[in-house]
Image (cartoon, rainbow over all chains, first blue to last red; front, top):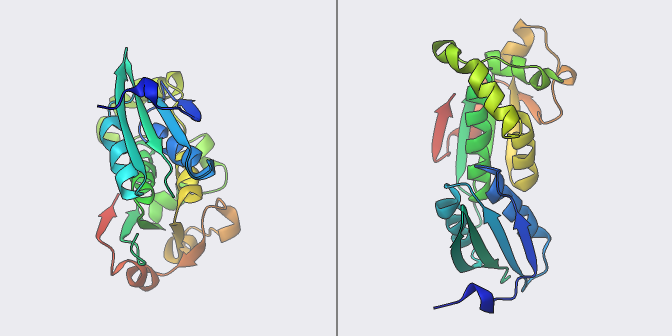
Length: 82
Length: 141
């Protein structure tokens, strides 16, 4: 099981308080601008994100490193693989 | 991804904020999922696309009018971007095309220069049907 602490995050986005479709859009924008190979984390308090973000990562064929629940929000981590 | 993206088409008939938010949110989701989105803006929808109109549009569907005040207050308190800003971001994100209905424009004497720049072109109904005939789904909002 992958531990969130083992993953080196290159960029972290804090979009707590923003809701659907805000967190996903922020993530897409950040991934677009990031260099290939980088790991991006997004902190979202929107309950829709737990479905939307993995779905988008799958569709865009990036590597989904997981969702890590915290107090009142979740940290989603993705690697830009191409 | 496949070379030809799936398409979604929306006929934007309404000009109230609640329904325009549905249009912008669905468009964003579809664009994010790699779909091409075509909007056909007609009737009251076109009124809402006049330059600057979105900044003062506080209209909401008549059947849920009692929710106008709490909805507007919540949107302000939670800093929800306007439907127009969301739609603009969707356009930056992927393939979103917005077409103005030529019939409404003629009827209400609206020129394309009177409309927000997000409008790509003016189209007649047949032109839009042609663009949307191979859409995966079409919505009338």
